[in-house]
Structures are given as C-alpha cells and as structure tokens.
Amino acid sequence: MLKSVFIILLYQLIGELFQKFFGLSIPGPVIGLVLLLLTLLLIQKRQRVVPIKEDLFNSAEILLNYLPLLFIPVGVGVVMHLSLLEVNLASVVLVIILGTLSTLALKGYIMEKILRKKTLDD
Image (cartoon, rainbow, N blue to C red; front, side):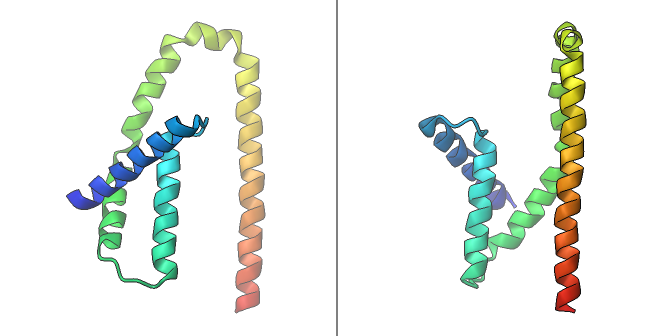
C-alpha cells in the first residue's frame, strides 16, 4: 500500500512540475491524476499484468474516505472572506446555478449516450 501511495504522490509531483514549467492554469494534482489515468489506460491497452494496479485502486479508495477533510480549509476560507462574498453574492449564486444546470445537462446527455449504446449492444 505504501508503494502505491508513493506512486500517487509521485504523479502529483510530476503534475506540479509540469504545471510550473509550462505555466498552466490547471492545478498540478489534476495534471498528475490525468497522467496516472493515461498510464493505467496504456497498461490496460497493452494487456500487461501489473500487480501494483490493484494496490493503486485500494489506496485510492482509502484516500477517498478522507476526502471530506479537504473541505474544511475551503469552509474556513469562505468564513474568513464573508464580506467579499456578500459583495459578489449575486455573481456567486448565478455561477453556482449555471454550473449545476450545465453539469446536470452534460451528465444526462452522457448517460443517454451510454444507455443507448448499451441497448444497441444487447
């Protein structure tokens, strides 16, 4: 398990370095996770058996159990800048509503495509 957590953190570091080197606005950990996903997809495509793959999934599942703890700093930041939020409340609410609606629409569209493909395959 320790080896797989190290691999996850290594990909996060690679993503951070990639982000800093190219000056991208995408967070480094996101880049690292995309690189990890691409690596796993490449391994799967070549049909190689990699024992660390199962360890990665188990470690990721354990880390996901602690994901709610990451929202605590965000909540503290919101409380500390409440006056700034009050000034821009209309904009924030509009962005939240539009983001939620667009996410629901995109999820519905993708789900419809998946179900249609599954029906055709059966």
